[in-house]
Length: 290
Image (cartoon, rainbow, N blue to C red; front, side, top):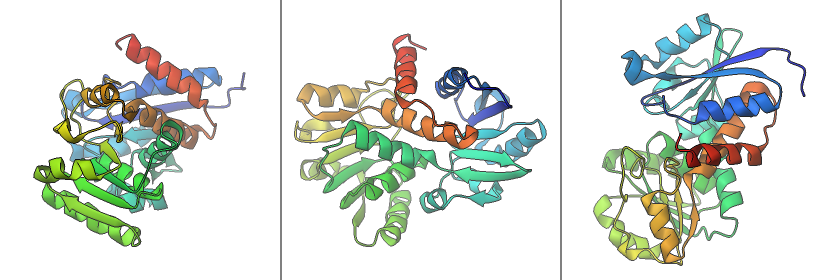
């Protein structure tokens, strides 16, 4: 067991984060390394704050001795203006989900992209990446779109209820990946697009326990598709369940949840965690209904 040289105080800022399994996942892995590590959710809806208050919360956390924060919806883009430094990848994505406080300065990173890249490589190693349809381009959606292209996707079709957001993301990604084809599409185009793509990624909140259901009409989905979801509660979303019934290859959101947590833990502590152990712990908590 490691010698304890310091303690860690970490927070998760976002809306509806009290039930998040990220804090216990971090704490259990820290215990395995002999670290004193306390991780607390800071739920905007509970404390009566808005996403725009994220800077105020960061500064208060620094005064109270926090070492780091994970950042989630709706603050991943709003937090950027309050940071002193930001990693190249986070800047390219336009979203931050991990902030380290060091020497009074705020350093921003994005482990959503690296976490999804890891999940895709390990969970769907043989996935065909010629063309992918992605639903949702918000904070997590921006990161996984970047990760898909960075992983080799040649044609990426972005769909979002906010057409301007999809168009803006497509334009930005086209500048970053000029050799790829990135198009903004509308929800009404999805039925016609689905049969023409290799993979489908749901980066929308549809499928979460408080947003149940399918994010699209799956009539055009076949066993030849691969299907991925970023939602991990439940781990078997309606989309993942339907895809499995068709015989399609699937990647549940638990893979990305573990991937991003692994990278964030290493950024915060400098220690490489045990990925398999963190995945097993997450699944055990989900099975227990936590």
